[in-house]
Image 1 (cartoon, rainbow, N blue to C red):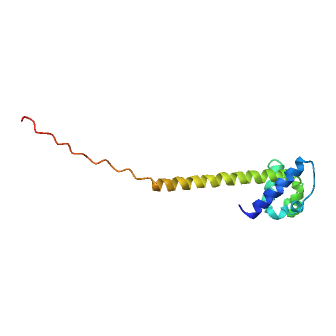
Image 2 (cartoon, helix red, strand yellow; image 1 turned 180 degrees about the horizontal axis):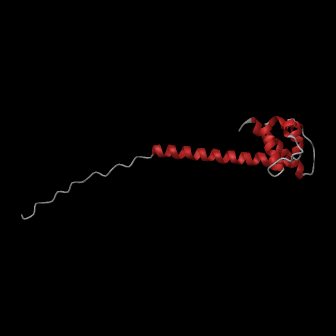
Image 3 (spheres, one colour; image 1 turned 120 degrees about the horizontal axis):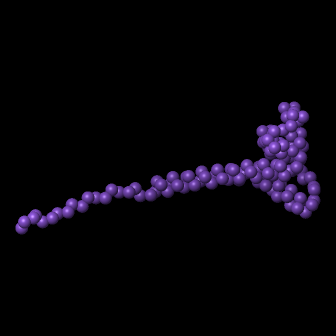
Length: 127
């Protein structure tokens, strides 16, 4: 697991814990979330928040990444996005691993050998 993913998991675990305890504290990491996501990812999160398309009054071309993060607002949208993304990655990794295992197992399996013909000899008739 890469460092970025670990940092995000720790941050979101803390954010969810604080939310459960009804503590709304802004952590330094919260302000720095912008450094953990590409512009494309921030826009994808916004699209998800607004049901597929971002309203036209928000001119994304002119907005800085920090402004995109502010527009997202609630970290739950970000948590939703990353958990879905990580779930897809995990599923893909599992499929690749299963395919590799089955390919290796297929190579190690003994190949079927054709049956040897047994020649049956019978005594001659009429003796």
